[in-house]
Image 1: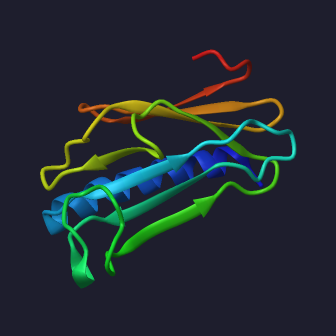
Image 2: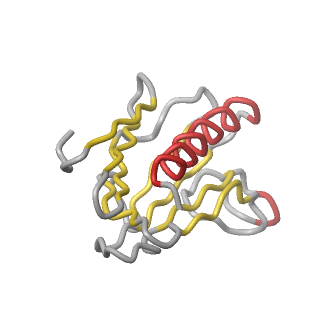
Length: 136
């Protein structure tokens, strides 16, 4: 799998979460499950859902319950690792409120054997950076 493509998919998923939160005026949660880097990849994942209380769930509790809509459920493919997330919580997470503002800022890092990507979420924007040595 292509690391750049996977980084763009993650970036796009975060943009979609933000737009969905604004459009539906609901909280959208993004949970990250980083795992230790391996050269074989296929480790680490992220999960995005609308935290609106549908189907008996609890709205705004940062936990998918009831039948709250899942927007993405992605495990890294072979050769790519989601190895770092600086967001708080277990699993680490951020969310967007109905105004499109993130619940907290942080970084997600993915890599293969020789390239790194960092996607940063802040109140100002979502940014993506590339590195060939892991320093950003």
